[in-house]
Amino acid sequence: MIGKGKKERLVTVPDSYIDNVLSRYRSSLGLTPLPRIDEDSPMLPSRKTGAPLHQDSLNNVVEEAFDLVIKELVKTNRKQQALFIAGASSHWLRHTGATQALDESNETMLAEELGHASVKTTVEVYVAPAHRDRVRKGSTRKL
Image 1 (spheres, one colour):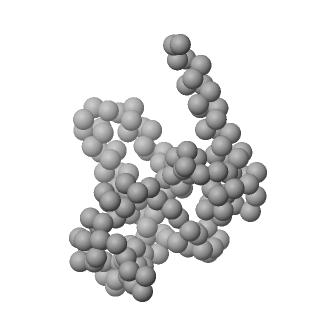
Image 2: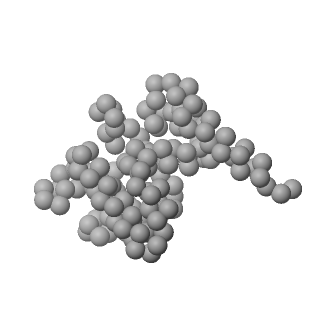
């Protein structure tokens, strides 16, 4: 993946994603469930050209998906959840994924995957808040 600053990034995903999402998506495109080593098909092709989606186009797809979720939440009278999702973005998804990855990876590996020049950035942005959340949730548990 090419990320911020046009830097190449290695992105890991949970096995459940590969089984439940990627394989079905690729099959819908007429591709094999998993990519071959010699395959050059883009992960998200343009509907018009088949070329990889540009970052702006991908952000638009994500925003449209969030808008559909918001409309459904409002329609089903879950306005508070809709307000929460209204602040979401592609970058928000990056933060969510990184926070979830904390359970499976150490700070150094996560920093490399996120493309942070310093592990300190990863610890301050992802590890410290996640630790605070765990402490806060744990303090209300009944023993």
